[in-house]
Figure 1 (cartoon, helix red, strand yellow):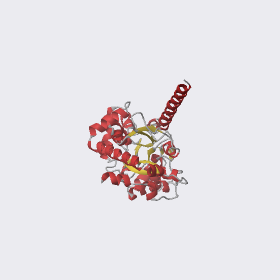
Figure 2 (tube, helix red, strand yellow):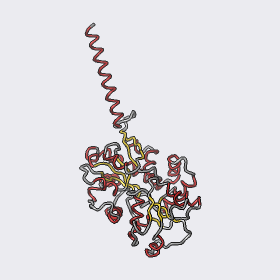
Figure 3 (tube, one colour):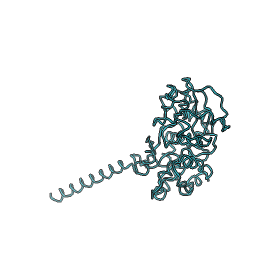
Figure 4 (cartoon, helix red, strand yellow):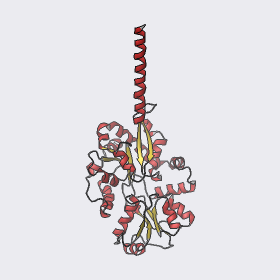
Length: 341
């Protein structure tokens, strides 16, 4: 009888131990109930530009690679710090934002695949004026003295606006007034209410402002800068070293998402409607049309040295970051190259 009781105690203890381990695994996000490795990607905002990532999730491309990908929105720069702190496996961000966070960090964030390959920012004004945006003197004259809804300081739209002012010969602190709301959608109301003359932003804000009569088509498009790794997917260096097969599978799924968005416009619209259910179909279609026209998304996931130099010039010229960078430390294209072969 004593042996039986002892056997039961051992069995119960073993079961409790297993339950504790399972609970711990679920809390850490290592594996879900389907045996898929659960990983979290942090995004700064829920953005139409990240459509290839959403398509890869919705169409099961990640599951084909044994991954269960969850996207969380972490505003105010938390999409970067959450990766450093281990709360997110990776992020979708500008490589320049990652580089600024990498300073003094022994385990830097490294970009592994490109998604948005154009600077997805536009300038819209409240005046019905035709401006030759390729003429710097004309652009300088128009921008001088204007109040611009430039978005959160430190964010890419804000930095690009500051860079343009400097590029045409203006001082962002003296020759213009920059309104810097944390909420990107606030730029429409700022111009509508007369608190700003110009706004920067992307879709669906552009179409929203046009429909309200706040502005017409953008008078300046930063997509004119050409290849520009505006939003790339990145992970920590230690993740690449410890889980290369996971990173490789992740990159393969993203490349499938990029290909699907490029080739299947109906699928792109279907996923957009699922991700942005409160946005009118007309606005979503306008967003897609603009994205395709401006060649928004990367075709091959590659981040070139020449393209990377552009956002790094922006942060350097605006004075936000001046400590330099090394391409091979900030970007790792081994998984893209392997997948495309």
